[in-house]
Length: 294
Ligand code: ADP
Image 1 (spheres, rainbow, N blue to C red):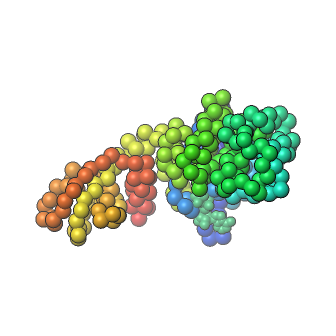
Image 2: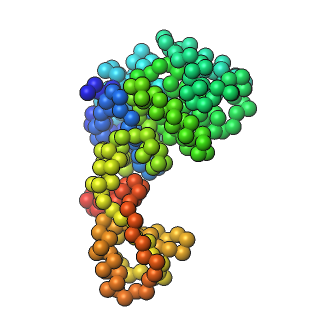
Image 3: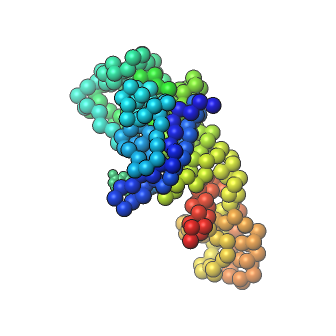
């Protein structure tokens, strides 16, 4: 498989903060990879290194067989950073044409806007767009240069369900045509809806790199929900959260937890055991890693 982007043993520090700690990651042609992790995990730093906005403190970053520092290499990629500012006075169509003019074979304006459900806005000034429309335009612009590889940093944050779905459709269409995508997200459903491969990042390190399914299976945690006032210390509980008058416990061994709970003699009711979400799996991996480090 052709590697389109690669970090090898990359460390990036900001002063005393180690944002990335010896990260090695390959993105292959045709992949749609979801980068998942909590705030501060190092996701944006990783994207910024790939697209040449930052340099590694140590290690190497390769992009399309060259260096991200090379503007000619960068012409082969598309990027939507977390924050974008578009000129308010320009019309949507004008911005698409302007950005497209920087690339040798841009996507035709009407086609690009249609892909992202923006065709009705072609004559609108950017200043008059809603936040969600601006965000969709910013993401669409990552695709205007007919890139081989696209980096999207939290593409759908702040969008309503409908806007999110039309963005997903645009991203999926690009991928179906053979395009390669690395996107970061807080939305688990987004990673599940789009990506086959998930890279879980925490504290600047890659904690898991596998299919969505496999990440779940590796961890195999359960969510145990019940109503109880006070709970004793229960072994094997990865996290405890109280919400809506119920207690939510995450554990890798729900059978053991229920036995311990009954043995403790604490009154409880409404016991439910559910399969994990990706978020639960993520919490468990992070907890395991910190236990391992400690
Ligand atoms: P994420 O995108 O996963 O939220 P970031 O890559 O933004 O994570 O941040 C990783 C770590 O690096 C955090 O601790 C963050 O505070 C720190 N960091 C990121 N950018 C800077 C910067 N420009 N200056 C100092 N610290 C930074």
